[in-house]
Length: 489
Image (cartoon, rainbow, N blue to C red; front, top):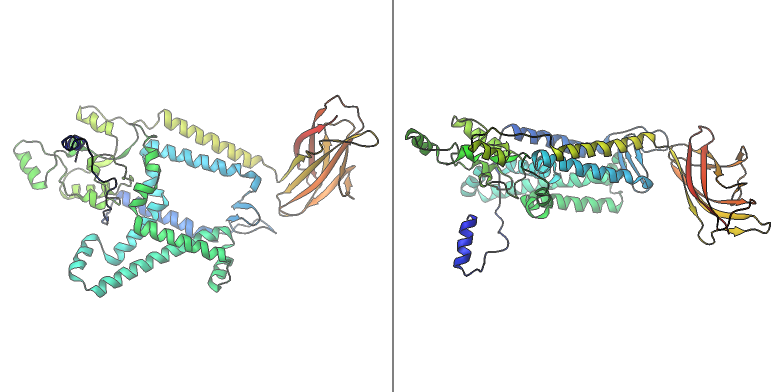
């Protein structure tokens, strides 16, 4: 029903729209198709799922006292390991940078070719593809399933249904199991899971993720893309007339007719489009969209309708590309006899690319120049300073020294910015280096201490001097600093 018809019906009903708010779900069983985009989707499915399932077992030697798993989220010790990169809790800004990069890449993909992420890389799409492949392998294509409903015995249909759901559950179970392997040493946790000695939280999360994968990929499928995911609604505000989307070229396809009728019309010199109204594009769509009705919220831009249409066009001896990645503007330009316009480089794509380069460059530079040690300081708040019996002013600080190397290190501590400053460590430090107190910090650990800074020098009224604490590796010479203030009366 088009918009004009809806308006006429609404006026006839006295302005009362009694249509239901939600459309009842239509079960969608897309047919198998073959072609360029299907091959791309298979390749990406194998690559992405291969990385997801196998990456926890990849080893990376970080030396003694360090985990050997290449990618590991070590919640117990507050570490994230990614091959040669180690992220500490205080470096959470790297995670923020990754999220910003992910958003910008998503924006760029949308500006270039619409919902590329949804159609090819989204986890919901990838796992749904896998589940549908299992369904077709066990029960056959929709045509075969319809035949079985008429001719196959109940026992055969029950056996196939049970086999399908069993395989779905196995995939979902391994999906949940692979996820928890990123949070502990994978071979060790696999053995613990097999012997029943793994932590209870591991079994709980495997159960939760098994259930969600089975339900979302096996049963909800297109419902997730249409109703649960916010991205279809967001991307509509980010696209423009130059972004390529899966498009039915109605300038070439209309008026549509069956192949025989179209040929008869052409013999009579009457207009006839290339679309033979076979509905193979609809049958191939994983969300049940009829792309010939134009761009729609449900369409995930996966390109399977392109493969289905190209196959039909080849059979009927017509050029491929009736459905293709194109723009509505180009369709209209061809109708007017104008050449198509393709503008890959435009303001938004250049801006997104530049931002990706800047954010990525900042992160790479920060990772390349960051040290393997660090110090932070907190000034005592109550009291801010103390006047000792000899007239000197003393401030107290809490220092936290970080050693990011997998070996113990000794650090000399010094302070500057306060005239005639005297540095003491509460509790006493027996070892010194050139008159500076020295502390030992264990491998991949932090060390907290209380530092007392005092001075006999005359300070100006309401003094607040800039003070800087330095640490220096006694063996290697690497240094780190942290600023604060020295308060006086």
